[in-house]
Figure 1 (cartoon, one colour):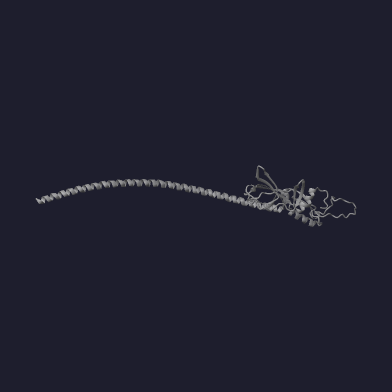
Figure 2: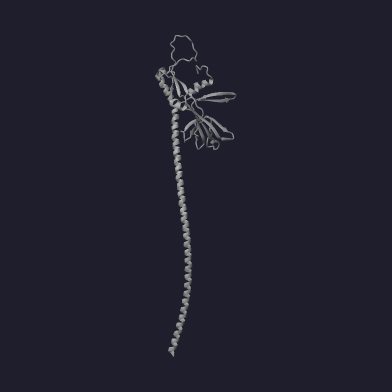
Length: 325
């Protein structure tokens, strides 16, 4: 690393390595010696998702816009010094640079009015060290302002450590990357766990910090549109569900009325059946009485016939006696 100037080691590592090339710094201790490792990749991609309704209790997404510039001052390469001077200057000497005043109405800055209204004024200097033409410098500045990727997105997640409850699941490991699936609001993202906290009294409940991923403003705006669309769909589904519940309640009330009506009909049928049963019993009693009366009359008829037969027999005998005289 040549030409570092007088910056601190931490600032130099951040500027020359992390900001430019990416990667991760990890600290490890071997014996009594601490080692700072600079790795291009750290951890592995896990297939265990952090999924709502499964092991994800809640998820909060924090957006840091401290490095989001709503006004930028584009500067080009150093203006060559044409004066004949032998003055020697240090590496920290500030040299004049090409700017955009000539092609921007006398202003050396570019504004994003929509961002200023939304996030306020935050000014930053953007250097294009190989540009001298003010028109090209302005065009590059406008493009940079449009495409800037300086919104730092970090998730704070409350999750359940299923690996402690079921051996079929792996433990959530610091440094590994997991798919964060909050399906009702955001698209699925694979993000790295950069911090893990838990209580020794309830180790299955963990709080994770994941992400620290820079996004373009256009991506953020597209996500907001997606979230709004998802919320509209959720609201529509909830409304449809409410309507379905209302319809079910109405149907239930209708069924209650039908059941009540059928109960009344059953009661009426029961009363009619009881009356019919009483009528049948009365008829049975009448038939029994008729049978009794008939039996008595038949007995009387038999007796009368026997008496008539005896009378006739007596008369026949008397006639025969008269004929014999």
